[in-house]
Image (cartoon, rainbow, N blue to C red; front, side, top):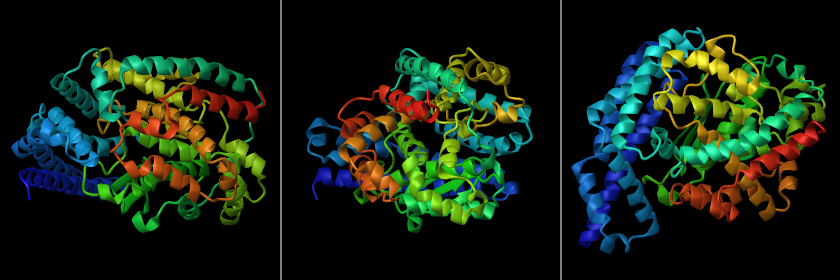
Length: 502
């Protein structure tokens, strides 16, 4: 074994050890969010904090620093495989970023966010922003301290955006969101003037047991592998990708609102399909995950909305729904299709329709920018939140549970994450356009319930690559061009013009 081979092996072994810590932490987090005893939440948060600190120390250790310096020498780096080069690039970026944060500060932060998520779970149903506020204030303070340590060029928020979507900036997002807003606002207004769709039957009570069985069924239909995952219940749905052989999906059931569990399940299933189909050659590396939150969201939104809410999808699936959920036996397919695509300004982001969804994201984006740039205090969030909902959607939350407390992301410190949702919509529309061009029989496949050609194409273009390709390379690999938001507006205009006969 040469000296370079020995150093590369030492590096890969260290990364594999870190991935093992990440997997253990993933299981602890999943358990905490899906049924761990509430009395054990504080101790569990401490345990998560300790293990996270150990993981942090490994990533910023002198050993990691020395290996990165030696393997990134031009004479060495150029002779490595593409996978090893990309792995080193990711590790170097993480190392440089993390090295600026003192380990004890990071551990304090992890414990704080873990506790904050448990407090949020209590505060939301109790409409108690006051209980959550001190935790959120501390999280915002820690986040701003981290940004100062990491550094920034133009806008503090850029540093947070880059953590989730490499290369994204406030300047770019402002332009993209401006283009979206210019197209969506008049489209939403035009829809509002049309006769509203009948949806009352969607709120018929359906037992949670029945909903669970149908959620399991629909996941299998789209290709989710239950031998490599499971479905559980939580207050805020998420997917946990521990490794391609263990990707867990969670959802939430509301007895008189089938739409919530149905589409949150498909949404999280989209995330899971990505993680389950990453190439096995990336196992144990830091590339064995989605390349960015925007690309990850593209898959959840593509499966949830562009496939899962399409007419062709329900041409095949609706018979099974009526058989398994006889509460809808008297509802025609056309009625059901229109109902699941209803456009109606709503208070809750996760329950919002496909057309107004991006307005929810824009609100959070504006608030986050202000918080991080010291233009808004946490204490004023509920009031400003309500003002923006009135401005953007014409509705005002009656309480904080349906307002500022509705999302878990800030409790987990996820500032800079929300724009990924809208970026995901843009990526998804562009990917769908490219996929239909590559698979002319796409609609026929969906109408027959045959998702194998679709999943195979997505695996070849996106899934198998994990983090080997960056976001710009992924969209170029899929569509042969850079991100273009016009595909999303064209898709939405065509779909809702037909549905509402504009």
